[in-house]
Structures are given as C-alpha cells and as structure tokens.
Image (cartoon, rainbow, N blue to C red; front, side, top):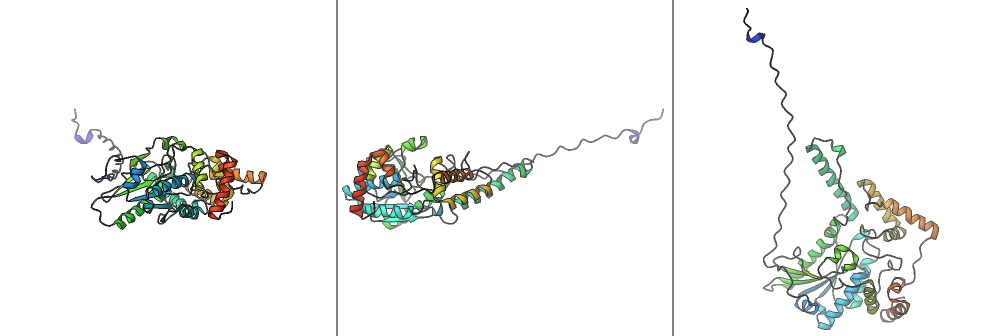
Length: 364
C-alpha cells in the first residue's frame, strides 16, 4: 500500500476572516458646567419690594407683547413707589425680520411712556432665525450621514433630525434672546465697578402659568444659575405668573400704554410673526399680514425637508391665508381696543382710548 504524502491530502480550506464591525466614533465628552460657589441655590426672599430694594439692577425683558407690557407697568409702579426707578432697565431682544414690524419701536415707546430711564436693545450676532435653521440642518445632515456610515448603512438613507425649533427644542430662545441678554448683564455689572461682592440682578420675565403646562410649572422666583457666575447673581422673577388674561388687560388699560395692533387683528401671542408655539390662527393671521415673510419660511421648509411646525407646513398656512383673503377680502385693521374689549368690556376700553389720547397724544 502506498503511503499518502502531505501533498496527497485535501487542502484545508481556511474560513474567511469575519468582517470587522465598524468602530463607532467616541462621543465627545460633554463639557461640564460648574456653577460658582458664591451662587445661592435659592433666593433669600420672594417678597417683591424686598427683591427690588436688594437688587443693583432690575432688568425687565420686553418683547413688546401684552404680557411683558403689563409686567412692565406693574414692576415700574412698584419701583417708583420705592424710589428705585433709577435701577430699572428695559431690554428688548431684536429678532430682526422674523418679529412683527414696529415691535422694537413699540417696546421703546412703552418704556419711555412708563418713565423708565434706560432702554437697551440686544441682538444676536450673525445669522437670523431662518438662516440658523438652514445652518442647523446642514450640521444635522452631516452628523446623521456620518453615523449611518459608522453603522455600515447608506448615508443617503440617513434620517435627519428636524432643524426647526420646537416645544422640546427651543434653541431659538437661547440663541437669539437669552444669550444676547446675558451680554447686557455683563455690561451692567461692569458699570457698577468694584462692589466687594457679586452684583445682584433681578431679571423680570412676563411668563404666565395660563400660557402652557410647562410655564405653569415654573417657579415665580428662582435663582438663574445658568446666568449667574462669580461676578453676578441673577434672580428670575415672574411678576405676573399667576395673572389671567383679564388681569393683564386691566393692567394695560390702567397704564394707558399703547399695545401692538396684532392683538386687535386677532393674535393671542406676539413676538415672532411665526412661532412654532403659536396657535394656528395666529400663524394664518401672520401669513395674511406679512406674506413675504411667510414665503421665506416656505422656502426654508423646502431646503430643510421638514414642515415648519409638526403636522402643519408653512405652505398650508399660506393656503389657508389665501382662502381667507379670497372669501373675506384684504384684512382691515379693527378699531384700537378690539382685543381689550373682549376681556374688560367696551366701557373700560372707551376710557382707555380717551386717556391714552389725552395723556400721550396718541390717536385712539
């Protein structure tokens, strides 16, 4: 018998090496923000007059809307009674083309008529809201495609997160309001010079519990630890947090300060013409009054591939506005006081218009 040699044995098939799974990129470590040890956890007082007396600056944020207007009137009245009006600063965050026309000028007029000695305007540098949405979309797209590649998937099929702000992602407020206002805080603290302690800023915000479930959960007074640091302690005060719509309009009528005409046109809120948190009727109203801005939003929708508001595109808002224009004709401005009358009655509105005209020389 012939002995088999090594060369006569069948070749051993080496199994192919398994494909290596893509190694996921290590996430960048999140920067941990530390709060200075001097920043308290809770305010030492929640009594309005004590907070005003204790503050180095009382900063009232004014959007030009009815809530911030009523808050302005209320806070200024208390500061005057305490002889502390010199501490009061009204600040308006200018949103550029996306806010109602004349809002900045109205906020300044309201502050001047109320007797506030100082009015400041802040504005985010660089891109406006629509441009920021497009920039954000580009970044989200790159991120989604890279993550798809790491999973071994076709990046063309990657699902891109929505670029528009939403109730769950209100990055717009941080970018174009909170950030610029904090730069004002830095300037105000510098003006105080050396105090030997952190400066005390009382920031007044016109948020109300009646606006949403989220706002109902906010504290009326709290330390703003995000805005505070070793040089300043910022206390957030929501003076009208518990107020109803009726109370807000009564304060406006009492103050005789002019309010934005968008309310008489039917708006419930005022700031951006098209706010993702606004009710549908407000959005349609905006499309009727500012059609060129609505068209700009619609173009951005196409670029980023998602609706401006979940379940409601700007294209649909424009369509509804067009239907109303065709059936009702061009919208005419209702008489001043139309919105106010719904809440406090026509007699109170008549007095408001007469006093406003007599005291401020404004056409009623």
